[in-house]
Amino acid sequence: MANSVSVENDVNVSSDVAFAYLSDYTKIADWLYGLSELKPLTEQTRGVGAKFDGTIKLGAKLQSLLEVVEFEEGRLMVLDSYKGIKNKSRWEVTPNGATSCTIKVTWEYDLGAGIAGKALGKVVEPVVKIAAGASTKSLKEKLESL
Image (cartoon, rainbow, N blue to C red):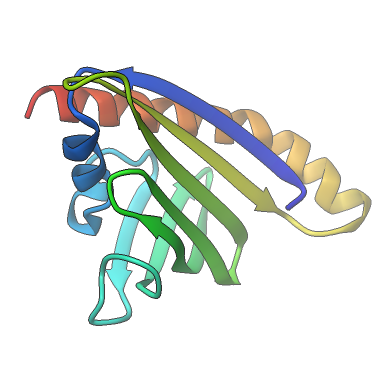
């Protein structure tokens, strides 16, 4: 992908609790900045092969069809687009002891090749950084209030 943004945050809950919450698609709209809709497209809603239709508003309304392409219970979830805006999100949870963990998100996105796509990518990057930071902060707040 052409552009990438990473943010991490320490959270005062166990890694198991954090991962269970962040990988539950019914809770994602509660903390993911700009997410207006996330609909499952398959009966399976967790693990490799689960597919979703997602719409996020970051200035413009952006839609992608997403598939979970990597999933390690309690540790890792990776979603990759297969239609719409090209993007990939990687959510990693690392334990820091029994009652705390670090959550790291890496968002990759591609707004097209050529000069226009690269220029637009640079314009959008600060918005994506804000969205990533706001999402991890909101996730931390939600988790620590459980």
